[in-house]
Amino acid sequence: MRFRRAAGWIVTPAALGLCLIPPVATAFFRFLFPDVPDHLYTRSTMVTLLGQHLALVAISSLPAVIAGIGAGVAVTRRGGEEFLSLVKGAAAIAQTFPPAAVLALAVPALGFGTKPAVFALFLFSIFPVLENTIAGIRSVPPAVLDAAAGMGMGPVVRLLRIELPLAFPVILGGVRTAVVINVGTATLGAIVGAGGLGVPIIAGLVRFNPAFVLHGALVAALLAFVLDRSLRSLETRYGREA
Image 1 (cartoon, one colour):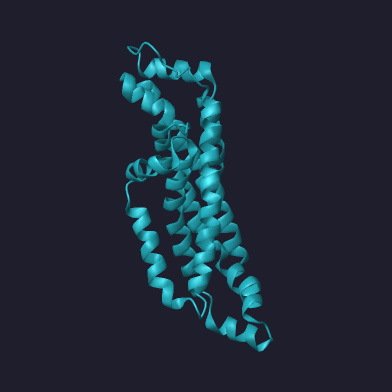
Image 2 (tube, helix red, strand yellow; image 1 turned 135 degrees about the vertical axis):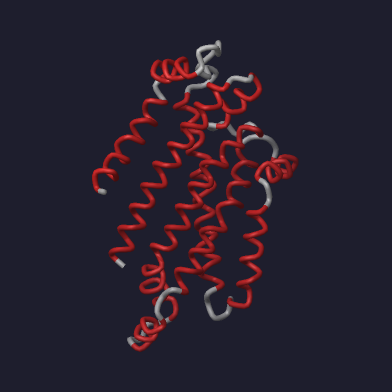
């Protein structure tokens, strides 16, 4: 089991690195698609597109995590429980909208570029974080909270020192889900000129070039796998400590 985990940590980042080396990627896609004239997207390097993709994911995920945790904490307080169903419903509705539709609606207001893409990704990231924050806080045993109150801890101190630390592994699971979803969804950002790994995918679809499509999709999939394993290891580590 440990060998399989170690192999996963070595093989996947190594495969991602090889996909970013032009001669290696060209040889690989020439082998898969010998009849395609162009095997590598050349208008921008894959390293540049990967950096743009990571920026989209980070810029959209960070505020979504903050908003999701904040909303989750707010609706689990005594004065906010009446808004629980409303907040969860709004987040669920935001996530059910097709990403392409959200982008199309956001472009007239925000223009082309990164803004509509970040806005769409932000909406799709909130729900997993919100759900897991609520579930994590509600999973804290009432006896622990009663003991903390008996020790003289106020609501804010209990939240910061008891509830959030105990709920952190569950919250981190929501963050992991949101980030992985964002990595895949961010490929649609290329439609509105936001760049990222969707650029070669869109170019491949336009030119009927499967090498371009597979290259962008493969790098996005490997990136999602690496981020998923990294966040999962943190989730497991803090879960054991809790």
